[in-house]
Length: 444
Image 1: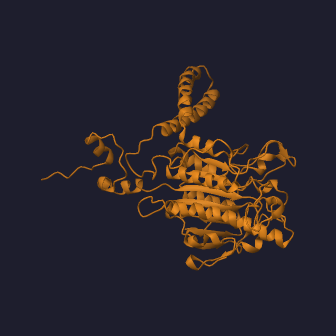
Image 2: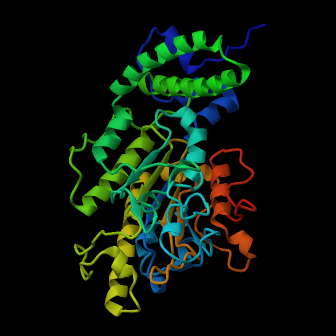
Image 3: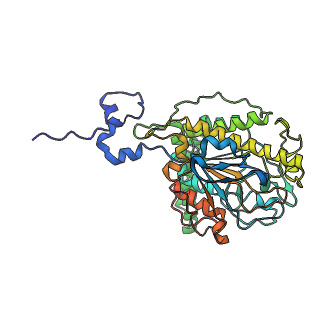
């Protein structure tokens, strides 16, 4: 009786051939691994959040219907080619803060935390960092936290200025300052020389900790163990960043960067700066350097000007958002909003061109959240956040629809319900996030 042919893996094939060349994903070499091989061949899901400040012209932000018949307002017209790839959300808000001064309405956008007037930053862990703790085990960089408009330092209106300039928090008291220099972002993704130096330091730390542990009490040993766990996590991250071998399963669509290292200076053209940050996110996702990224186009109480757009007043965005029903300001407000939507459309077009195998594109394998921290900026209206999801989350999100929670009880309109649903789509085992009461239904 003839013995069955043993399973042939990619690793076995390469070793048998005596090859050192890393081949692309070849499905025919994984036939014997069945479902496991098919699962490993799937592209990972990425999560991104892109935020523009100071709300929208409320008369020009709307969508109704579904699929190709979806009707988009003037501001959302740049998304017309992607009607099946977007989910427009209505009547969601950060439940704890729905009106009032600026500072409680920005930094808690991704956490749902209730801020207080304290001199020491106090918020809550944001959903991007919750997801990054899960996906960061697989990538050299856990997450990218980026901005176009630099954050301020010190205090503003009696509270830390960081409340106006970041939405990413790794813990209740740890806001993450966003990076605005494209070169620094590029180097974090691809320059491993610093990590190699850190590795030698970690080797010394590990050796010393073993000697120290013997003389510590039980409680201190526990604290040391917690510290060493974080050290080991850093070790693994260094290992992934400096020695990446993918002989099995899905492989990134790019092996080397397809863009040059950016200049050291901060770009002075807002348009160029935004596009460069978007291109860096795209590059990081294509090379699987990270699976989580946030980008703030402008900080709260933004000083950014958009006079380069036709017909737009050359005033600060914050001032234009307080339109007082002035027709000139409303027209400028709408065009600035549309400009931000154009940035989303640009990134979606780029992602749709990236083939990630199994009949999917990068746009199919992403959950990209886009919107602002308030609705009508003139009244600081924090209800009905202007929010759109782009992409399909690896098939978890249908797209091509409008989800309206206006008929539901107020606790079912919480933005954290959406964040809980996103985290679950990303594979995070999470039953609650922030003030959520359920995972937002209707995405699938």
